[in-house]
Every structure is written in C-alpha cells, then in structure tokens.
Image 1 (cartoon, protein in one colour):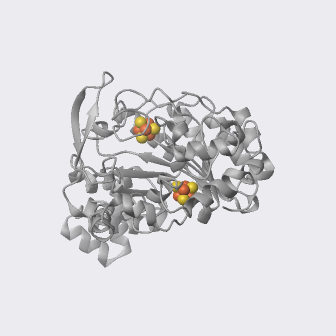
Image 2: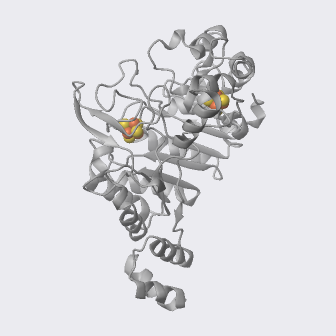
Image 3: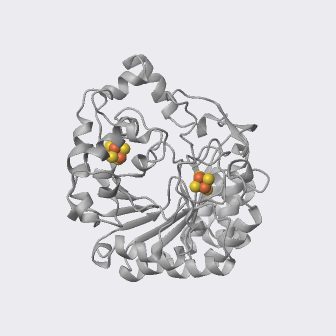
Length: 406
Ligand code: SF4
Ligand code: SF4
C-alpha cells in the first residue's frame, strides 16, 4: 500500500463516546439506540504516547482528531494529548472536529493556546439556534457559541462546517455572516453525502429515532440544487451505464485515498487501518464474516493491528496493509474478495465524500479577513446594495463595514 516512511497523516479517534445523537451518524440507529457493539472506550495520554512516539510524530504533517463514532471532547485527556502532540512537533497541523457542546470555556481557551495558528478546530454547526439541534441532537446552542468564542478569543483558528438540510438551507447565508462576526477563520457549507439507502440509491428523507427506537421525526435533503451532493447524479448515471450499483462496485477501478495521502486511521481501541471508512466497518453486525473481517483474521486477527500491542511500523509493514487490502482491490467482485467499502469510497465514478464540500469562505485575519468577508456577504446578498458598492469603491469604506462585523 505504502512504505512506513511515507506515512504523513494520522486520523485519530480518541473515543467512541459522544454527548450528541446525530441521526445519520454510524454510532447509533438513526440517533436512537447506540450500537451495542461499540466498546465505549477512549485513548489515554499514556496510550497516545505509546502509539505515537515522538520519533514518528516528528515527521507527521497532519493529525486530525475526528472519528466515526465519538467526539473527542468526551475523552478525559484530549487537551493533554494535544499538548503532547504539539510539543513533539510544532509544525504538524493539528485539527479537532467536534460538535463543540461540552467542556468549560477555560478548557476551550486552553485548547486555543495549545493549538495556536498551526492548528484548528472544525465546529460542526448545522444551522442556527432554532435548527442546529434538529441534526446535532442533544447539543446546546449557547454552550457551542460560548465555547467557540472562548477558543477564538484565545487565538484559536475556528472553522465552521455546516451540513445543509431542507430545514436549514434558508439560513446558510445568515450563519456565514455570524461566522464572520464571531471571528471564525472560515465557513463551509457541506452537501451531505448521507442521503442514500443501503443499496446506494438516493433518498430524500431519513428517520430520526428516540432511545426506544421510535421514529420522532424525519430530516430531509435540501431542496435547492445548490446543496445537493453530486453523488446523486453519479448514482443515476451508474444505473444507466453499468446496469446498477452492484455491477459498478464489482468492476470499478479502485484508487486508494489513504495510499495517496500516506495516511492511517487509529480507532479508540487502538486498532490501525488505512482509513476511517474501513474503521467504520469494525462495529457493524457480522463484521467477522465480512470481507474485511475475514482479511483481518487471515492477517493475524484484531490484536495484530492493535497499536497498543504492536508498533505502527509493524502494523503498516504487516500483511493487512501490504498484501490483504491492496490485493482485494484487484479481485473481480465482492464475491471473489473485493472489500465493498473500498469500491464504494474509492471507486472512480462515484463519491459521496468528495462532493461534500461547497465553496469554503475563508475570513482569515486582518485586511484579508475584511475583504473576504465583504466578498462572502456580497455573494450571499447579506449587505445592502449601497454598502456593497461602498465596499467595491474602496478600502476605507471596507474598514467601516468590517468594523460593524468584527
Ligand atoms: S457529534 Fe459526531 S460522533 Fe457525535 S453523534 Fe454527531 S456525528 Fe456522531
Ligand atoms: S476505503 Fe479502501 S481503497 Fe479507500 S482509502 Fe480506505 S483502504 Fe483505501
């Protein structure tokens, strides 16, 4: 797949615990019952020191603390872990993806100082006060806003990622303006790639369940074509061209994103896989009988890929990374041994993930921020026409407009 020396990026899932209950997250059944196969564990500072020793960290460009099943703000030693990662290498780009709705303002200020400008926190905030909770269930708007402010005021680089649904598409521009006002570094509307059924057919609505498994309401895909993920169109074209998604998944050429980036994923239990997409398969029903489960079994079992027991070097140089997974890409079909997730995620003609990101609006800092903000506002018709003209006419007027928002 790649040589150990080529490793440049690490995706770290510090915990599979979460304070939220997002209905399209793989940790639960549509936001209701939590997947009983999840171990509900976390990595400690001691674990991270062992798994990621300083000599490895010195050559890593990017560490992103995100995850499939949990949010790192629920892990006990997240701040200390970031301190360790920063002290080991002051040039690594360090990122945290989070719902932002836990921990004290002081914790967030400390994180801002630890990460500095060479790090970022990506807050997943999908709407405004009256809509964010419909997807980010069980989160608190006031806590998120307080925490983001504390992080930004301490010098942290905050990014706002906004999943667009029918219930919040009318608020994209308003949220972008709030992001600029608050001093976020960037604002990115995202076209969610999750409106597909189990057979990868596009759907327009998805249930939201309570803790007893009852449907409480539905969330719906956006109406505006601007926010529809292009994978919908790709799925239609695949039907016409290949006679259905199963045929396509059997034959598509696979181009491994993890190999291209030189990246690995480490789960909250310490298991190492090439990517989070394979990591998300770990706790599915009948995992052991799945193609990936069988390949892991053939390569020595789960312990053989656990970085608490073996070094990352041993694992990356081991049979799963170097033979079993890459060899599976050349198999003629899932029945013959292709990993279905690899075909779905890294096939040539369909991607739910690559089309997610709408245009990022970067606000940055200083004069650049003011110009970018004015551009954002203009594109989204947030300023009165006269003000837009004033912005176009000169920097002095721009500063006055900017002062209103910063
Ligand atoms: S905040 Fe993240 S980990 Fe938690 S439920 Fe939502 S998507 Fe899943
Ligand atoms: S899903 Fe498979 S092909 Fe895609 S990045 Fe992961 S290991 Fe590579």
